[in-house]
Amino acid sequence: MPGLNNDVLLEVMAASCRKERARLMATSRALYSHGARHLLRETPHIQTEQHLISFLAFLSAQPDCCSKFLRDLEISDSIWSSPACVQLAEVLSRASGLQCLTLNGKSYGLGPTVFQTLAWAAIASLQDLRLCNAYETCLDLLKHHRSRLRRVVVDCPPNFDETFFNDLPDDDDWTEYHPVHVLQHSAPTLEELCITGWCTHIEVEPSPDIIYPRLRTLAIQYASLPLTLSLIRAYPNLEHLSFSLRHASRDEIEEYRLWNLNAQFLAGGTWRHLRAFQGDLADLYVLGLACPIEQVTLRMPAVHLEWPGVQLLDPVLAEARPRHLELDGWPGDICGPGGDGKFAVFRGEAASRLETLTIEGSLEGRDHVDIDVRAVLDDLLGSLKHSRLRHFALNIYTEHIDPTSGVKSDVPLGAAEQAALDLDVEAALRRFVAAIPTLQTAVFSVQVPRDRLMTRRAVLADGHIRFEEERKTLWNAPRPTGEYLDS
Image (cartoon, rainbow, N blue to C red; front, side, top):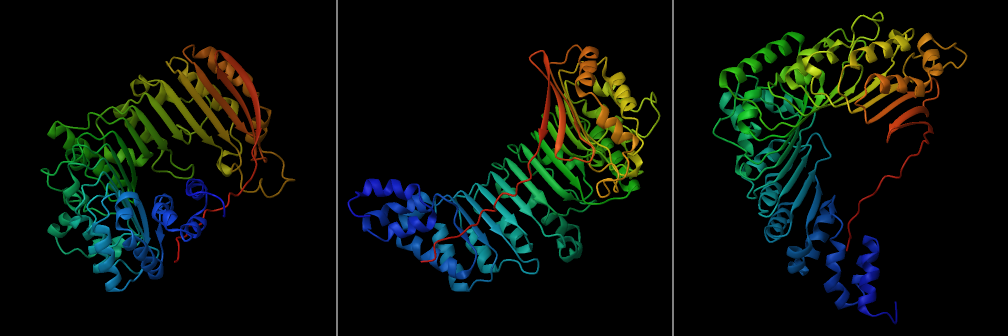
């Protein structure tokens, strides 16, 4: 670009893609020395050893830039040579500005080598560490890491319980690989922990002396049966909890709920600052939490399941007594006759603090083909009319009501589909507003039967109700591709 000074070219470089930035850097020494700031602004993604060698050569040529501008780094799992790993360890040990490292394994059969683990453990400045498809050596990396981490994400592969955890010989090994013990080096600083598929033994508790005073957010997915008191002791100031149980029988869930409730009662302790929970109804049930929770988001059981059923909602809400409740599914058996108290959970002490209620209600399968939608709304209104709700939303979905109706357009509408089609959403919402005078905002929507892209909606805002129709557009966004300069 003849005639343009370096200041202008640097502005051009800042607005260019990564390959164009690299091309501009090769045109002059001044652009090369200043270009690293722009080139490293996007997270480098190292996928092969050739990428790694190129990346290391770039950083070694400008060691100061590595320290100044390298903030994030993503590395895909690969079997690298020992010299490359040693060089990586040397470079990363000088990367004083590196704050976020993502190790993303692609193969379920191979984990990182010992040399790679040593390289990653050499980083002293990290605050955010994400391990995807994490194997035993990754857990060892966490145990030996030098940084005081603030956020950790560990995603173990689906078969890790069979290939590693279930082969641990005794309780001491289970304790050694418990998350509380593995991450204890970061106990004073860790604020957020998200783990998937990291098994714990249902009879082995971590040391009560290891405490994470700053941890506020905990997400445990695909989890073993929980020992709730151990979590309370380790993370006493927890505010946000997301929990998803791996698998358990009905008897096991009942046993561990009772165990967890009794343990908290005998210890005289529970979470005092827990503000939000997210998970399945059975997940919150088995935890047996004996503390109020401001915001609860629950996935309700599928309509075809006999257990766990919606009958678990009453004892769960009796303990949590949330102010804000979001339910993905109906809070009662809508197949029952009208006036049977199917939503009685909203009449008792469990809903006494409720201010916000959102229900995502699907009509599903053959069980709901003949549902009396108007009777369901009458029952729900009857249970909420004495509440002090300020915000309410009810969204009804019809696309899965009958497996045949989406395929054969000539099949007549079922009773529930016809009722949903005929429903006057404005009039229905006005009934709720009249019965619940505390309402400030409200939404009532119905997906048009056999037209899943069309939704009819009534909205209460600023004291007025308005009607809306929305047709969604199917659009597949292009997937972003990651690449790094191959010099």
